[in-house]
Image (tube, rainbow, N blue to C red; front, side, top):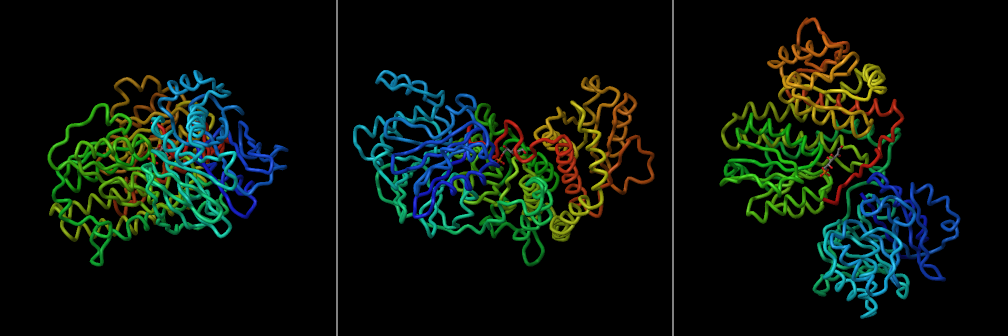
Length: 610
Ligand code: F6R
């Protein structure tokens, strides 16, 4: 999604803008722009395309400024173009915007009646016009922002420059994230802390409705009601290297390799001194779990897929009925809640608009909520009644890997913790499973990446020229197939369907023809024979089958052309070995096809619009 950066201080603002925006590239964007205060007024340089295109512009090279705002845009209102790119100017106001102004049509008409002429198709230019209109009345930036907020409906984070306020940046958030930061050489603004890691680590996440006024030496804050607020600065533990590739050709590959370590981080603090699963360090004690009779997991995309894997563990071990809902649907067809319903919202970014809306809906319905979130201090983490961080570290590639992986590891540990706390699992078993998640799963991930390097490339070469393919599986393997298909689709653009292996013959098998790739996953021993029958069904119709199955399957005669064996020293080892296999297969296929792996077309990292 869109990215914002801003700086005012003693340094040169323009290179800081391009450097910060480059870090934000991972969020996905299609146009970029900078507005900088100069001796001759505010100059705006913007264009469709990449930051490199902007950097090559002569107007940018000529800019010298100590106060600027910058933006990467992911088109919503109006396609990607030079004109629609941010910043937008209206009168004395120049602004950048993340989010969506829902009532922009009505506001546009009102502004047009006042004689405003619009250049772009964007809702952002309308917001700029409304703000300028308010500014004309008072001549006071904060009063103007406060008044404009009463008119703007939707979600937004703004960075604003006013012609006659040199060296000052104004900012406000309502629904979309925005942080302030202070460095040795000035004050900063960004939609995401990673953009500021090259400059500073001391930051403050704006609360809903807060208005900030940045000058080079301080940040002044006030609430929408006008009360002054003292920002509580915190220091991020992220290092600048966390947002760099560290020798890997792509962030996605780096993040796939970081998973062994990420699993350990995600579960270590949830195993107590006795080796038992325990979430008391997260402020959730055993008694809380005893009240939970029913769980609703709500999330989007891969996070929702992690929820489906987790629901299997929750039902199998904790014996709690668990349903998984697509966040964007949750509010429109609210599921029935019984006494003891817990709503779990899963989100890597902690800012996904649909997941946040679902969280707010659940809270308004009086249901207790738990956020499983990666990015700390984000809106979902802050608004959920309870939160569990996944500690995967910053995830830069648009397609999630370690985010998803740690969501699964945390849900796995959670199900064992609940099972033990409620007396549904004995201590010996709980310890054993907790230990296997922390020890066996990371080893299995590393083992697969090492052992099957060439096999993955060989299979990916066969997949790359194809237009359609299938993933099939039963049980947990079916849940993993859903994520496997999404990974292939989003980064290699091959149409892939995930099917419950037994369901294929009820219609869709008619699509299988000579050479159709089918990848079958089998992680549960008791489901192997049935999955193998399904493999035979497709193989006999010409499918080119790859089988990902347990290494204890025995001396069976495989009807697949390729076989990848998963370690079976524990359930955790098998599940996480399969999980990394589907990710690396997608990665290698996209690499062979020459796709833009870290920034797949049309996609954005943190989807902050509904
Ligand atoms: C796919 C992917 C998305 C996200 C989804 C939810 O690789 O990354 O499907 O999982 O947009 O995002 P979060 O977890 O940030 O709420």
